[in-house]
Image 1 (cartoon, rainbow, N blue to C red):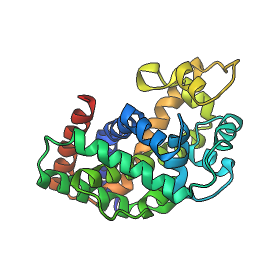
Image 2 (image 1 turned 135 degrees about the horizontal axis):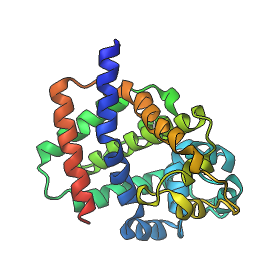
Image 3 (image 1 turned 30 degrees about the vertical axis):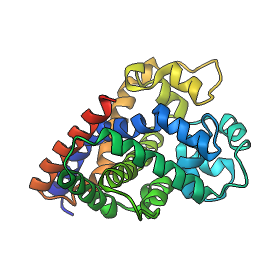
Image 4 (image 1 turned 30 degrees about the horizontal axis):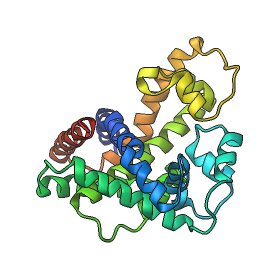
Length: 258
């Protein structure tokens, strides 16, 4: 890949990154997803912990916390310890994906099947072009079986894989910039999903570090995230890129209307 191709991919990653993250967060936080988790045997945040992390296998809490990156390890371990041991991790991940697919069938009902298939196909091509070295959570979801999904479910799964791809890239960018996970959380505005509310949600205890002086480094993190993720997006041609950006935007808009 030459410099021009990588620059094009980096630009694409920047154009769609926040929309892909927002699309995934919407279905993961949807009340219907929580209800599906309860029905599957996962109360409260356990569905997020065990369903999302189920692709990593039956591992210690620290392995999952390392891949999630921004959770306080001891707090996450306490949650992980309450998981139903009789449900295999792969079953939890499958239930999580089914919940996402059901959400997708509802919110993407206004899109044509051709558009959904095209979006899924392009997202899958980006994912296949990415290196598994970006992160285990991305690699695990990319390898997870996808049989039986309708076009909307395939879109949810494909964009979730890219969400994990960007999340893994972002964690590596944070560490490369010399920030700790809690500093990265606090230096991100509440409007972007950061700040004290997110720190509390991820079990970080007070007192919190001062982060006002880290604004420039936080901006560098976003740019580095795009560069790390960008090599995969270079797999799309220019016309495919424009089509992909348009379809991601439409999917994101549909999710926001829920």
